[in-house]
Amino acid sequence: MSEQSSGRRVTANLGLTLDGRYHGPGGPGDFAAFAPYVTTEVARDQLARIWKDATTAVLGRINAEGFMGYWPPVAADEDADPRDRGYARWLTETEKVVFSTTLTEAPWERTRLVNAPVTDVVTELRSTGAGDILVNSSASLIKPLLAADMVDRLYLMIFPEIAGGGRRLFEDGLPATRWALAHQETGKLGEMAMVYDRAR
Image (cartoon, rainbow, N blue to C red; front, side, top):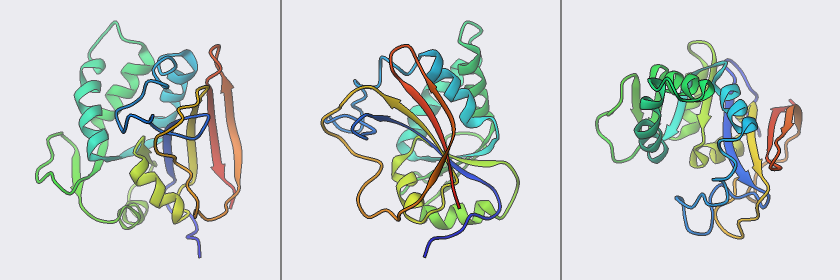
């Protein structure tokens, strides 16, 4: 039985190739198919869109380490694109919930470490506070939330490449669900920003 949405909205952000991969055949660090598109106007507009209503960022440890190693200096870089700076400031300043089985102390400010099922933690987050809960580019967390029908909005960047290997977001066994297109934009290179809301 699928869980109905209640309380705060749960959103998720991810980039995918045409064959549905969130990384290439070289493993989790293989983003060769994504590289030409991540700094386009459409991608940067989508980046600005994902955090606009969010007050909590949910991340896996690997993404958290990569993001917090890259984005904080961008927040202070006056030459950076304003959309990048806005996201960087938000990520640095917002509440972060990082899933890890190895970290014992949070290396970043405003961060809570958890080692529990993501569905339990997100259920708890939904019942307190206000604003969206953004599961930020962490497929290992988005997948179980999709399986539990707990995602209310999907922000997807679709890149016009076939990776030919790598992990897929939408695997067999997910519950059948219906989604409504809330926003769509296509860039000059054929990249597409899609926003889908769960139709309940």
